[in-house]
Image 1 (cartoon, helix red, strand yellow):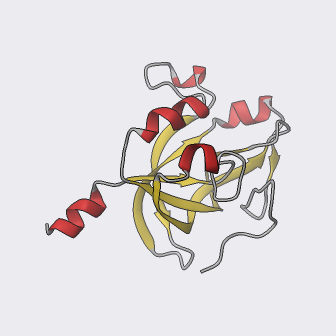
Image 2: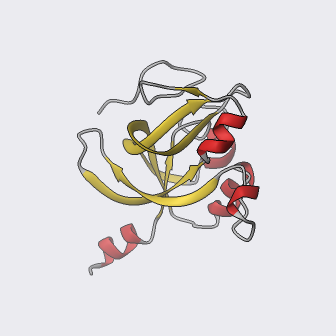
Image 3: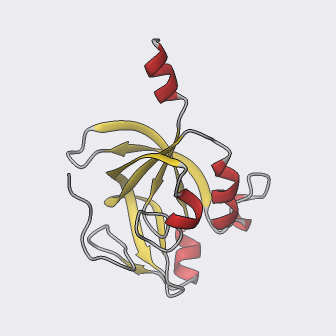
Length: 148
């Protein structure tokens, strides 16, 4: 593996579909100055809008639109875990979201490899009265998914 590929593969990759996306509520606080790449991306799942003003993604077969963020420093994960109510040592059912690796695609549906994503259980989404986002896009500030 050459040096460029080694550097690229060591980056932390996170798929974001809600408040961590560029332009959304928590992007500046958690990601500004730390993201080395942000590209429109797709993952498979189910997307819901929660009454608290943020979304939840569950496992599923629909397209969910968001961004693939790449970070040089993996230490960002502890901050993101805290924001998302995820603690690796807790039982999954005691976390608000659980961090998992899923396959990510670019906007032309070409595989981009795996990235971390925060998923909520369908049971928790139902408890919180989540509303399906049929178009696979959630935003507090804009109405259309990213385009390349």
